[in-house]
Length: 146
Image 1 (cartoon, rainbow, N blue to C red):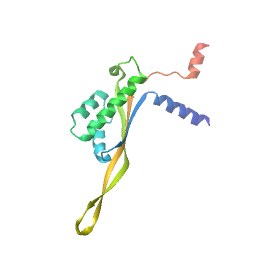
Image 2 (cartoon, helix red, strand yellow):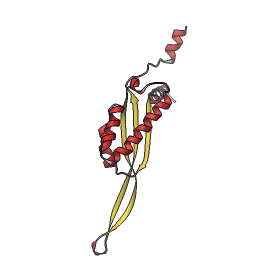
Image 3 (tube, rainbow, N blue to C red):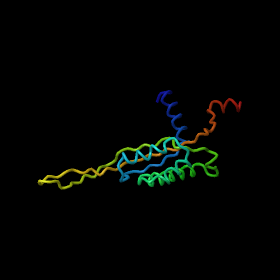
Image 4 (tube, one colour):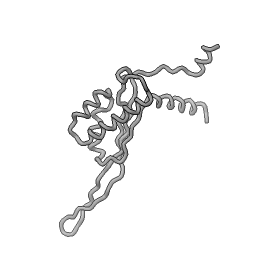
């Protein structure tokens, strides 16, 4: 592997250490309805996003609320003994992708049938910290030890 690819892979790996991901697969809500709720919390702080989801009256908000709690639990596993308020977590991105469609048939007049597509979606929620930890490069550490 070339040095440029290696360096970008290392940068991506260090960036993923501060990101906390939760995924929801095959959620039986249409992607369009889920995106309406996902747009409400994208870029917000975790506490305000939880409040928004708790008091939004759409059905998709309950599922996103539980997914947000799962992402926070993933953060707590990686950061034991650190308070969430000090770390300043926010919703970096919420991606809603379409998943499988259940195809059903509804009877129509004159012996015909209309197709009904019951849609579902996949949701990926990524939390990140606004306070970035200072990471020293291995070369800098070696120069300080000399």
